[in-house]
Image (tube, rainbow, N blue to C red; front, top):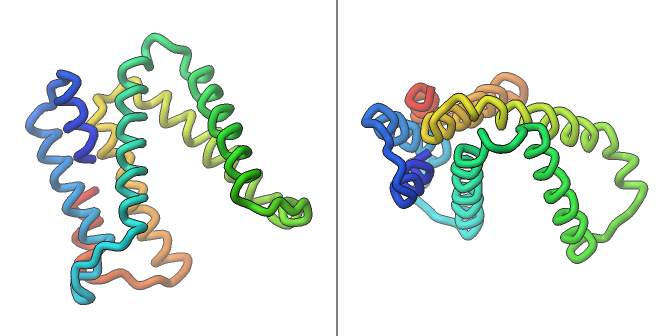
Length: 172
């Protein structure tokens, strides 16, 4: 949420005060959701991967904003799916042991993830982002963490820390 307006500043894009306030509140909310302050403030090596992922998604939001009006959104999404598929196949061949029976066992989750989560949801995100400024889009997309936390509590009976509820409210 905060990386998008910062990258926008580097590219000469102006972000309004309301968007900055929303981004800061969203980052504070995400902090309250993700960190258990009673366990102390720790930083693990996996957190660097998450920060790297956040930078890549921020760049993606900026790219969609920059080129979204010039490129047919469905074609743009399909090109991204193709590129991701090729890169993931290469990574799987290098780092994974490929066993056909595992694909059969995980067939339904793989199809759901590929069709619904990636195909439908990601394409809708790209289409919808055409009508929103980049910082607002990043704030809206951050509500995923709110719904995943609530879903985890309702479906998986996970418990959130009391401050996590405040975090959800800040993001929302």
